[in-house]
Image 1 (cartoon, rainbow, N blue to C red):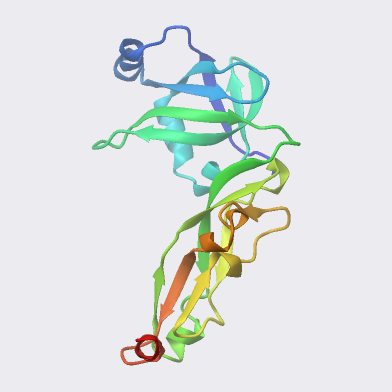
Image 2: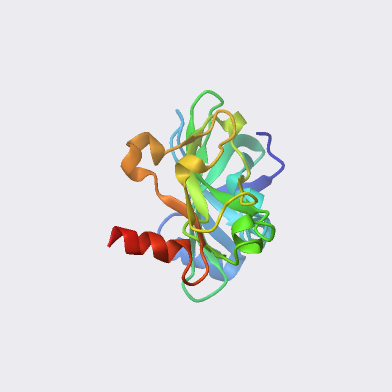
Length: 206
């Protein structure tokens, strides 16, 4: 997947908690790190307001990014963010270098479509509950999807969709399913209306 996002950074030599606090307080910057591949980890400075602007786009989290470090460019993914517990502020960012031939592991958001026309809701009067909003996948960088769609149109009341029911793009695998059937977790549930299929199934089990 090609990158439409460029993150500008500068190399950082001054490390430690004190240096990080000065960055945030006096310069409007935040500390970051890029690691992975055959290169050594590198400490970075990022402009906070520029990063926050990029973070407003959901696709930023699941895209191959261009990290521009003092004019030297690398392909990376955003691996982790540390946020302030009370303020709308990012404290630290981690980037992972990517190689075209090396699989990457990342959480990708689920987009549930056709919920308003779902037969279990529209015709049977059920309601939908999401057990998961994203899944962890593994793929080559070129196959990385921005999101994965879950089509709810034909899902009937009383039905639970699991990870194995999701249609993944070509070249994309679920890390959970790779661990075995015991990890085939529920993703979304279309509950039957009160007294419907859900309760009948429960009574039969009892």
